[in-house]
Image (cartoon, rainbow, N blue to C red):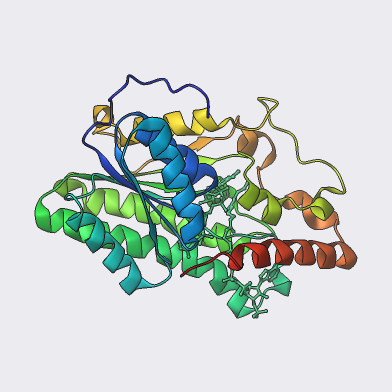
Length: 296
Ligand code: HXC
Ligand code: NAP
C-alpha cells in the first residue's frame, strides 16, 4: 500500500466496519485502519475472499480484523450483521460505505433488473448499513463517523454508468442530509470521490479490453492514476478525531481529472453495436467468475 502519514496507534480503540472490505479500495482502507490500531470488520458476499483478507491484514498488523459474510442488499441481514458487531465488543466508531456494483453499458440496453443490480447494492444497501449503525449510535449516545465512497460523477453525471451515477448521487445527498440531521448526536458523515485507482473489480467491469480500443481516457492533469496510500491517508484523516468539525463534505481525490476532462465515460459515444456486444460479454464473464465464489 505504501507509507501512511500518521503516527502509530492513531486509531487505537476505534472499531470500524468497511463494507466490501475484502477487495480493492476497501481492502486498502481496512489495512490502513488496522495498521493504525483499529479493530476492523469487513463484509462482502464471498466468505473465502473475506477470510483471506482478514487473515492477511491481521497477520501483518497484529490488529483484530474480522470478516462477516453479508449481502448488503438484504436489510435484515445487514441488521443482523451490525447487531453481531455490537455484541462483539461494543459500538462501532466508524463505518465506510465502500461496497458497490457497477458496469459500463449503454443505458438503452439496460433492463429494469440491470438497473436494480446496481441500485440495490449502492443506493439501497448503503442506506441500510448507515441506518443500522446510525440508529444504534443515537440510541446508545455514541459518536460515529461515516465515510461513503462515491465518484466524481455525482457532480457532472456518468454517461454509460447511469445506475451507478444516480445511486452515488443519492448517497451524496444522504451525506449532506444526515450531517445536519444527525450532527446534534455527534455523528459525522463525509464522502470521498476517487478518480481512477486501478482495482481488479472496477477495471474488469469499467475498462475491459474492448472499451479501450479507441482513444485512451487519460487527460489527468497530475499525469497518473491514484496511488493506494493516497486514498488510505484521506480515509484515515476523515475517520480521525482531529477533524470532528468536518462533516457533510464530499472530497474528490482524482488529480483534477473531473475538473479538466469530466472524469467520466463520455468518450465511449464513439463505440458501435459490435463493440458494446463484446464489452457486455467481457463484463459477463468477470461477473460469472465472482458469482461462483459467493457464499451469501
Ligand atoms: C447490461 C447487464 C450487464 C451488462 C449485468 N447486466 N451485466 N446489463 N450490460 N454488462 C444485467 C443482467 O442482464 C441482468 O438483467 C441484471 O443485470 C442482473 O445481472 P446478474 O449478473 O444476475 O447480477 P448480479 O449477480 O446481481 O451481479 C451484480 C453486478 C456485478 C453489479 C452485475 O457486477 C457485481 O456483483 N459486482 C460487484 C463488484 C463490482 O461491480 N465492482 C466494481 C465497483 S467499481 P436481466 O434483465 O438480463 O436479467 C466502481 C468504480 C467507479 O463502482 C469509478 C471508476 C472510475
Ligand atoms: P471492488 O474490488 O469490486 O469492490 C467492491 C466490493 O463490494 C467487493 O469487495 C464486493 O464483494 C463488495 N460488494 C458488492 N456487492 C455487495 C453486496 N451486495 N453486499 C456486500 N458486499 C458487496 O472494486 P473497487 O474498485 O475496490 O471499488 C470500491 C469502491 O470504490 C466502490 O464504491 C467504487 O464505486 C468506488 N470507486 C472506485 C474507483 C476505482 O478507481 N477503483 C473509482 C471511484 C470509485 P463481494 O462481491 O464479495 O460481495
